[in-house]
Length: 195
Image (cartoon, rainbow, N blue to C red; front, side):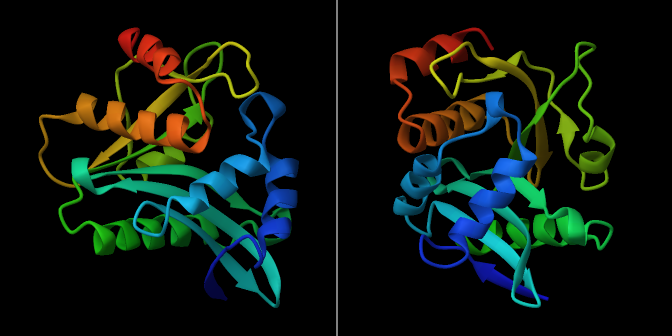
């Protein structure tokens, strides 16, 4: 097992194939979003995989906004052939450690998760094991295909006391969805005003 940095020329195609098999269309982004994110640079965006026997077994992507001391885990994917080996847990621990290396004052890490009609997320108990809790906010992922936003649950892990969680949410939301996805600030401000 080896942690690797995925780049446009190193395991990117394998990651995109795995991603396409894992996520439903409504919340699946285009390859261009990953490439735009990689252009943000390693101070702000990381695309990390686990390679086992020259195969991509799992990957995680995350953004860091040092000015606001917040990290945002965007994707966590484990190949079906490698499930049950605690790779997701290893990737979360690796991502959090790397975020702290980039931003020694990191206060908050967050991630989005789908929710059912009852408001529950299928992975809530998994995220709770790592001290992420469902933040009481009406949160929505912007429509990724020019469609309506998708209601999601937002999970937060506080590493330090912070009274600026909503500001952190706002800043990472704009960095991710404006800079990486190209969604207009006007649209994002409208969604933020409804949170």
